[in-house]
Image 1 (cartoon, rainbow, N blue to C red):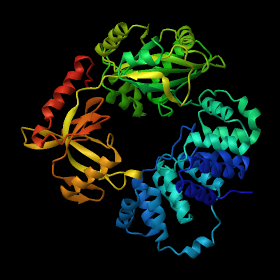
Image 2: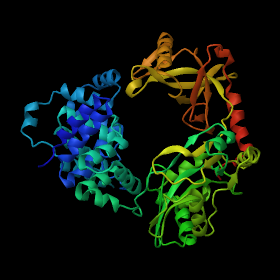
Image 3: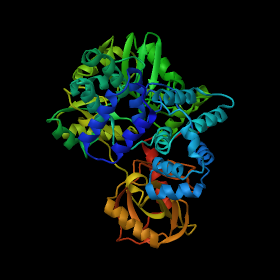
Image 4: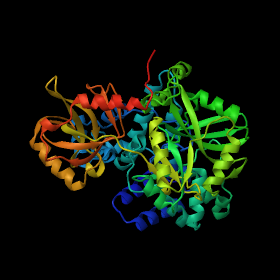
Length: 564
């Protein structure tokens, strides 16, 4: 029996209205059982907001501005109506559903059309992703217009969520794994282990539907299908890391770079980013280095790519990101911003999975396989003084800090636990003032909760924006700050309000970068409000001069990028 896209949309509507995990799992399991084998992977992908298979290197490449234009044409609703509806709901999909319900299009015409099927929607999304080259934007617009023109309000809601990746229904991958186990009567552990190996729960669902428990037990890593990464939990210092790991642990340098997963089969090498995106084309020297040095025929390696200056000293993270985004004239950029690879783990070696192998054994296998590629600096220690010196050495070398890894730990893809611990000193906090704010998304849609942060420019006699954040406050604090900012509002344009500078906040951050985004030329990376400073006036706010001083101080340990 063919599954209709409306059935998937109605499932997600039910899931959005409940926060009961068991009910969510049962609803999803019932839906999965109703699908034909070829419908399972597209359905699970779309349930999680992914338009095409996770492993695919293609993407829709459709901007929000393009979608807004299409929505206006399809619904014939004034865009101010959409903006107001979005303000009320805080959700792009819900706002779309509302304007579709208000549309001036003759609904009778839709009744005469065939209902959308899951397979048809997936085929359309795949066609959009494969539409490239000259005139592709216009072609995509025509395809999307036809798709949305055929959609009911509830279908339009979830189509827009899929297009934007803003699903946010409460149904995450962990619950989908439980639903798969429930639907096909397979032990949850078997489903989870297969998910770790494949890195894509939609592929797990497809395999489970086709072959059940036996098929999942045979699942193994697939070269060129990226695996979810193991993540580290943050701790305050080396003392805490040693305590949590039983008094002895392995400390590795935490480089200020970008984590990569490298797949090699024969002479072919591909590089995947932290987001599991294929970035091979942007990093030709990494593929060349791995091809020359790693003599293993089949391997999945993990490492850190660091941008360096001509002397090999690390330079700020923002310059490395320029490399990851570049797909044209890559060799010119490689000359301007060279990169260096440090390896730190191996997950797959000559056809055998190593994720259950203890950390130190994996490190030994990596050392035997890496050739001339450097591995991350390592210290196995049981004394805090020795570990503290190692941390300081990492900082002095221009790196971020340390990662502590439990000596006997396995590799757990997609999880953040106590087996890996992150130790990263924070830069001096700054006292800044809120000069503008925007309403948030999701549960924050009721509050002014995205804040523009400014330092005092003593020379100009004004405040200069150096960053933006929505992190650090409780719901009660969001509500209180919203009340205060509304009373200070000078002007409002759509979702943004400009306020009199009055509310002072203490900000922590990871780094200060040069940035054209703000007039100050500075930007805080990973800014977070640590507390509201009601004990300080705006005259006490840090100056833009101090922000620049901290920026310059970073280069006492870090190389500086020069464009020459």
